[in-house]
Image 1 (cartoon, rainbow, N blue to C red):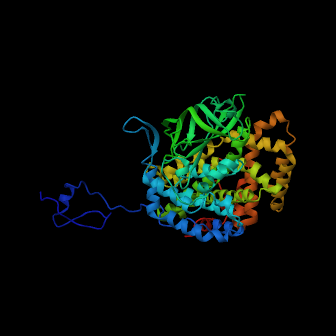
Image 2 (cartoon, rainbow, N blue to C red; image 1 turned 90 degrees about the vertical axis):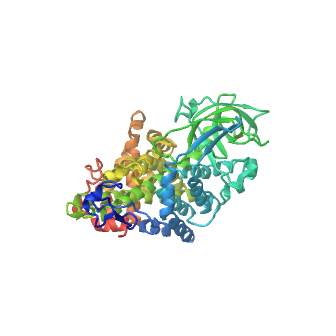
Image 3 (spheres, rainbow, N blue to C red; image 1 turned 135 degrees about the horizontal axis):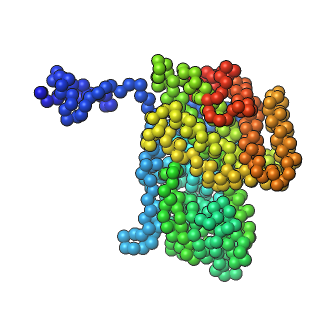
Length: 577
């Protein structure tokens, strides 16, 4: 038998034996079985803004034209194959903890792949941390939401420190001394990943520390103690002792932490990594969490051992203070989950348009078309709601906008984040086994999706917040239903659903709490229907309302009655071919 002789071929092409013959094909390079065909690479090398007409329309409607050129440039960078490769790598090469230096000094440092710093630097350079809180131009919150949405389609873990830093700004503004010291670093568009005292940094990141193992969402059950170093009171130094079960992004330059003051009431404290005298603060990282998803980002357990902290606000007002921060982070959860839905849809549509089965492309198969159309409806509805909520944050002096902000935001966090968990799995199924591979983007989306549903309050906590908001101001809830009802005045099924929600207010209080998920989910679907009726083409709104208000809808994606839906128009709008 002659030895195998091959000639060089193009990268990725199969080796082709020369005249040495087919018998040589089992040589040193292994068995040659077939040419690879009908395989579809992941969608890459595109601008996620350019292929999203609904998002571009929403930005124009919000008056955000001044921000669009910058967003377009950022979207091109995000869509580059090189950027997507960074996103894949930093979720595989995960952060590591270095507790001590080579000589045994405690450093509690988390090391990241360089790609982590590259993505955070790009986000900061695009002015997406502080822009909506500093810029006065109209459309700023919609522009921020669009930038967050675009970034979240490529990589979600880096949005954790960005989210907490942005949400800390309104809280810190209430503390004149801290704000004066930190304002320029919070507003900065320069990236500074060095582990140094605050005064030496060009820009800073902030995190949160609320959760303890015995309490979880019940922050009042926390046991971490804060003792005043002197007289105590607002702006005074305290010493914190205790443990945090989840301490997000421990390499942030400072964290806002809830701890109990001597009278037993919770306070909110500003706790930096370094004390003002330049020594390392006594915030000791015990370990990094091995999470299901969100792998690029570090989450940790920490011990405070007389850690330096500054009281923000009054003693006993820690929970209202931190909840103000959580109001912003919950919006980010909604936008982030909408981003995952969008990326899952784009990848599924791309795959279906290029993969064939049973003699047709997948996108031509009737049942697959029903699934893809359903995903397209869900994605646009989530995006429209995200940008509407962002606009409410921009105009929160308006009582009507405050209702959207305070009542619809937790409802949206409950619903949209839940839908992302389910529908990233559905989109993965479009790719079949290729989607289930661990190093593929669909697997990463599927693992990532639950974090937004859990972080900043799980589903039940969100629904309880909705119910409390309704109980505090039922008239605001009724006014919101009136607004939604006006947009859906021509839709009989929607009007009936609005009336049913009004009737829920007559439910005895002891029974109403158990209906929290029912009320929140129906409210969000109606809000999405109203937004689509006002802002989307009729073929989108008609299909959404007909399906989502159908009593038979909801068990699985793809139950859409495509006989009454313009599927081709839906798919083209979702991702113009």
